[in-house]
Image (cartoon, rainbow, N blue to C red; front, side, top):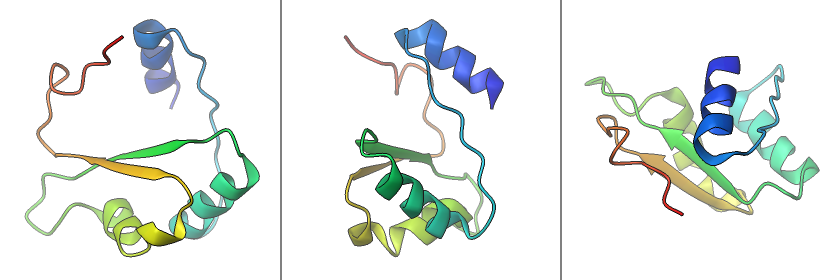
Length: 87
């Protein structure tokens, strides 16, 4: 987590909040969004596996309407340039 937090700080000069919860991932993500009204978008990265996009993406995709925020899924083979932050 700290590696990606540092990347966010270095890239877009924001300090991300690191949160670890125990339980069903979808339920915990939903509850975090309900608890923290400052969360405006959820970004998930798809897995390149043949079996599908991965458990997080699959779980959230089935319940995306239940989330009161925007949800974005990045394609599995996105490069840094593909997803570069633009100012």
